[in-house]
Amino acid sequence: MESELVLHNGGCHCKNVRWKVQAPASVIAWKCNCSDCSMRGNVHFVVPRQRFELLGDSDQFITTYTFGTHTAKHTFCKVCGITSFYTPRSNPDGIAVTLACLDPGTLSHVEIRHADGKNWEDFFHRSGIALQSKIHSAQ
Image (cartoon, rainbow, N blue to C red; front, top):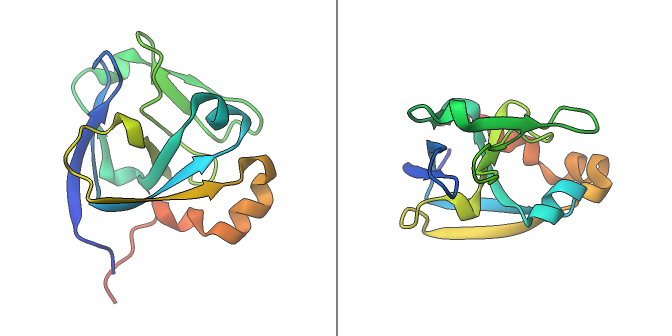
């Protein structure tokens, strides 16, 4: 059973990209060492895509960068360049929310785990990260 969901808001530095996401107040965030995340200092948590919503005309300010397998969709603001969310390779059915881009006040706890993006295949198979974009029903 999932923890109770909280509405979190966030976005980019210039505030042209704004979004809301339903996620627990306590999250597992991933600090990745892949070539892209390590350069950006990205720490993110993953949610099911249907729990993420862009607000207003945010989509007009977004552009996307891909590389390698082109599975990950690195979205960023055309104005300020901040990646406040993206579609991760580990969870193409989900959204990775950049921890630093959340508005303050809705998180009660963050557990930061290491994501070994340099050894992606091994990390992906042993980490269970793919489950983070799935909605789990109460059993």
